[in-house]
Length: 260
Image 1 (tube, rainbow, N blue to C red):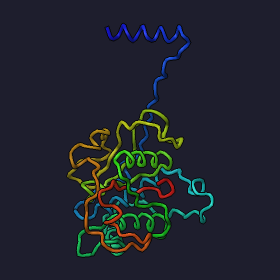
Image 2 (cartoon, rainbow, N blue to C red):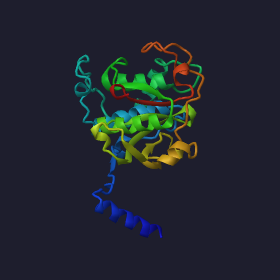
Image 3 (cartoon, one colour):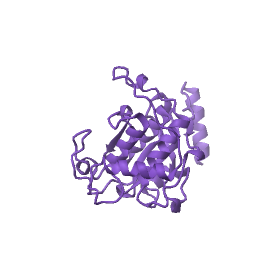
Image 4 (tube, rainbow, N blue to C red):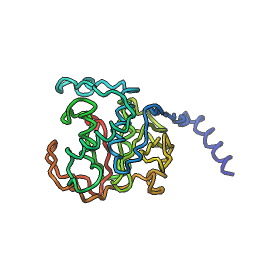
C-alpha cells in the first residue's frame, strides 16, 4: 500500500504541475597516499609529531591550496619548505621541538595541541607564526565534522583531530558526503563518513573508513569525542589563550586557519 500511495502522489504532483525532488549527489574525496605515512612506533608518546610528519608529507604530495586566494588582503603567502621524509629521527626531532613550544609542562609526556599546531607551521612554512594551521574548537560534533570536511575539500590539506578525549592525535584525509559539493564552499551536505589515519601501529587504522555514526558515537579508538585534558595550563604565546580553557569540553581540530 505504501508503494502505491507514493506512486499516486507522484502522478498527482505531475498532473498539478509539481516536480519531483531531484536525487542528491554523493561526493567523495581522499588525499591519502601510503608512501607519505609512517607509524609513530616505537615511540608511544609521539602521536602529534608523527601526525605532523604525515600531514606535511601529504600536503607535499597533494595540495593545490593557494593561500593568497583565500586571504587576498593578508601578508604575503608563506612558502612551503617541508621536504618529505619517513625517518624516525625526523619524527623525534619534531617531538623535541614541539615539547619546547607547547602550553603544557614538560613533565608531561608527548606534546599538546599547541605544540602540534606550532610544529605544522614551523616545519611546513618556516615559522610557528606562519598562521597556516590553527587549533580550532567547536561546541558540537556536527560543527567540527563539517569544518573538517570543508577544510579538506577546499584546500587538499589533511586535518588533525583530537581523539581519545583529546589525548591522541589522529588525521582525517578524506570524506564521503551527500548533498552539495564541499569544494564549492557549501556546507549543505550530509556526511556519510570520513577516512581516518591513526599514527599508532596497534590500531591498524590507515586510510580507515569511519561512518558518521561511528565517528560520533562509536568505540573510543575511532570516536571523535570532546576534549577533556587538563594539562595545557600556560598562556599560549601565539594567541594569548590558555589551552585548557579554550579546548575543554569542545571538539578540537587542527586545520587551515583561514577556513576555520
